[in-house]
Amino acid sequence: MSGKRGKRPEGISPGKPAKRGKMRGATIVAVAFLVLVTAGAGWLYLKLNGNINTFGADGLSKNRPPANAAGQNVLVIGSDSRAGGNAKLGGGTGDVGRSDTAFILHVYGDGKHAIGVSIPRDSLVDVPPCKLPNGSWTSGEHHAMFNSAFSVGDTAKGNPACTQNTVEQLTGLRVDHTVVVDFSGFSAMTSAVGGVEVCVPKDLYEGDLNPNLGSRGELIFPKGPQKVSGQKALDYVRVRHGIGDGSDIGRIQRQQAFVSSMIKKVKSQGLNPTTLLPLADAATKSMTVDPGLGSADKMISFAMAMKNIDLHNIKFVTMPWQYDGARVAVKQPDANALWASLKADRTIDGKDAGKDGHGSEPSPSASSSEAVDGAGVKVSIANGTTVPGLGARAAGLLQQHGYTVTGTSNSRLRGEATTVIEFGPGEADHARTLAKLFPGSYVRGASASGISVTLGKDYADAPAGGPAASPSASASTPDAVSSEVADKARSADDDPCANLSYG
Image 1 (tube, rainbow, N blue to C red):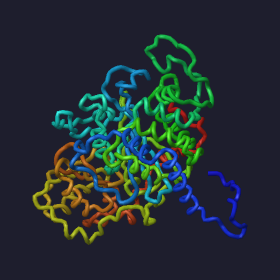
Image 2 (cartoon, rainbow, N blue to C red):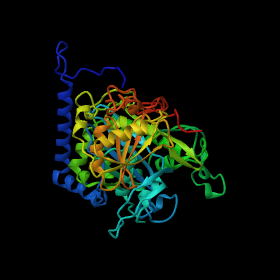
Image 3 (cartoon, helix red, strand yellow):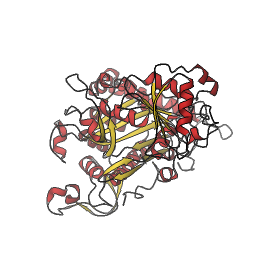
Image 4 (cartoon, rainbow, N blue to C red):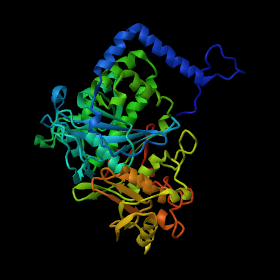
């Protein structure tokens, strides 16, 4: 934010500092009261509540990551279903709901920072078992495109629970809320705020939006800054051909710029009922949410939790990735370092942002390993480092605590910074108990059965024969996000014309 000071409020003397926090809170209450009085409390509440659709929680996995120590994670999914009112907005055919874009919004525990992490739709991931409309469950899928999770069941409304399961397994993060926004709702929200400022790096034509057109067509976006809303806003976030390398990665960067600009626009308008009522109406009409956000007061409460976040402290990054043929592979160990950083509630520059000033979930102490009993639990071990004999060392430790080691091997990836424990269906509690032997390790669900441990440099650096070093003593702390990720982060106050494409 700029350092300029506004005029001093009337009634506050020069020698007496204004109580800005209390005044801000009073303003919010006053505006809320004004809205309720002028609109009619009962009508407004019923209208907004009547707009909200929820998806069933019965489709969520029974083996979810533990609750977050600090901060909240919200999965935002953009659905490109052409069903209902979305059909007239163009771009494809069919009524099956598909995930066109997705990102995880992590709101830090201090209420002053947030980060959105985009997940490329072409990323190759493991999709865990998901519930079908008939009540049965799939067997899961290995090495599938990320956006295929949303289409499991082939319904017009999509399968947000399956996408949430996939994200939780991929990241090891507990998703607190999931929000699905459709085409028509997105279009209406941009109109409700009076348009959004965007920038286009080059002239774009109808053929860039629809490569099947067969010709260049008419000019739809001239090069440079401009304001868009409605259909034009939707076209802007969808177009990917004719810019950079024409990839989805480049489109993600423009989508991040768009979301940044929209946040900036909403914040600049302030708590204006004339703007907020149409925006709230458009937003609630467009969304399908988890039961935890299934009422107007819950959604407003969450939105208000973000009111004090400065634009510069709202960041956007893309999940670390690398090309795998025509698809995108998750890049390790960079991705795990990013997920671990969010789990510990650390910003991408390594600062604690938890409510207690530390942010990270306390790791078990070395003495807690004495209480670990692994009798009857089978574990496989892989060495994710280049340190010889590390697997045998871990196997000896596990056997001391009663575990059955089914085998040791070398991981295909030999540069792991943090030890990763993966567990299959029904093994969540055993995995968390096992984690006491590897303080600071990263625990996440997997579609494969059993429990596996991939040893990282943190374990290699631990005292020989003992449990892994605690994060504070390890050279590979959860805040070690790669500079390649941190340096490319976009802030919500960045120049809208900067970094708009990849390639």
